[in-house]
Image 1 (cartoon, rainbow, N blue to C red):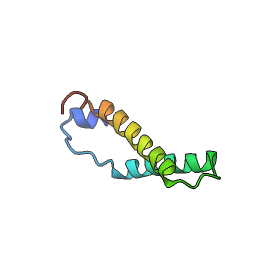
Image 2: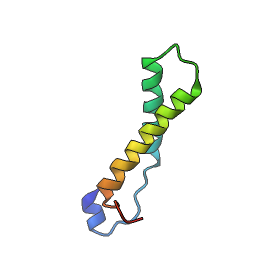
Image 3: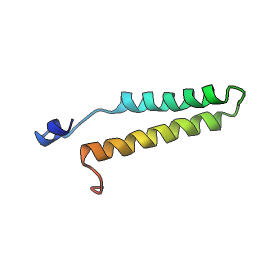
Length: 67
């Protein structure tokens, strides 16, 4: 990805990776706390997973500090 960006690519699609991260966070919480029925816990875990994926991608793409 870094080589492609260095070569001039300026659009990288990340939607699928973000959705997979969200579901991974939800599944992890469900596995760790199957008795929990509060959706806010599951959604919060998904949100945190997406946040971390976006943070890693911003660093990978070299976009940190450019917004």
